Length: 338
Image 1: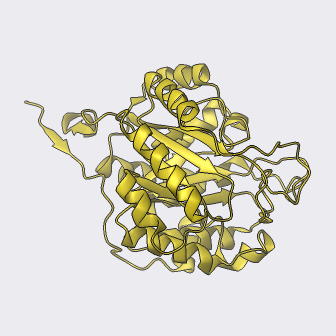
Image 2 (image 1 turned 90 degrees about the horizontal axis):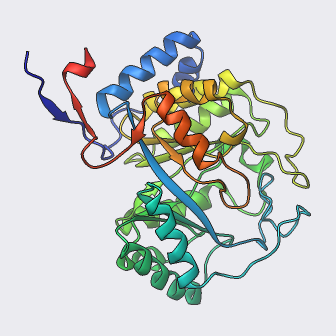
């Protein structure tokens, strides 16, 4: 029988149903292997299960943030050993972007430790974004809360994605962060969408939240309309000196469940296996890919915390017969689905 090719849409869709917290919580209660199976089927309906989108994340302005996020070593309020660093110059950033591209990344993500940028910062950022964009990379920025007009300036410069995580469930938010409100995050996300930027929005698992709060976190993401194009699911990296350094350990199966639930509720979004991979076994990461994760940060460092080494990622992807996503391999043969 002749094998035909079909291209699965990888663009976000309007909200097709409302995900109540109770409904998402019921997904979490699904028997583990049945949940993974269900998520894997949803994944295969929308993406090539052998293709992994590779992004590289670089801190372009480090430390000294005035906010009090309980998980963040870049807060000026905590003693974590992170040294404050001013915004890097264009040449340094472009050089790192070139290296990232040569190693297989197709998206270059830039993070700056601000509560939010000032107009003078946006002027510098537009120059940086234009330079990285000229390399042929997708660009993503995470610069904090945006004022009116800033998202439009970033879009005009060539920014593709804006990352702005909701972090956790609305009802758990104040237990983690006191210097901003959950609605502040939604306000910036609204500005980003209005400007025509793609949204990268997720959060962190393992910040002493309970399962119902994890369900609330996923429901909040799934009910964004349209849903985020990219959803990073981070496992808390415990950093000495932060309030969450002694957070209760999360069982690995609960993290995998969260990946699966994210995939089922957001079928056309990229689900990124993000921070915390350095502490995950190969077997755990494989289960996450089976459950629908199809994007990773690629490189030995995230903003200021460690990440899996590139060689380790290449070895694991080879073991699992995974390959970097390209425009061509988003196609899936009908034959491979049977």
